[in-house]
Image (cartoon, rainbow, N blue to C red):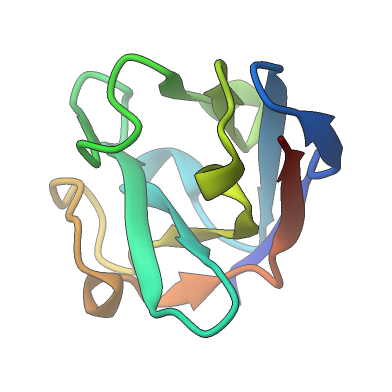
Length: 126
């Protein structure tokens, strides 16, 4: 059973930066597309970024393009989300997710992912 654990969320001022990490265990991490989603209070879970199995393909929500960078280190079984120029509207719980079928492309729909972490809170103060 794949387990995902996010870390790195905290309170930061607008314009600041954070790096989130997602540590995976219990599966062959390097074969699966993964993604980041976020959910603000009272809102649906939204796509943020996704990456294919080897990092060669990435996708971003329009709202984070140019500010966020997704990456992965398969030797460490870890995925990252570097977030720069943070805005108050980036405040949310951030979740990492993984697909269960190997070598699939990185999708933008939450229903495409089978494993989820517990989430890490990111709060951006203005």
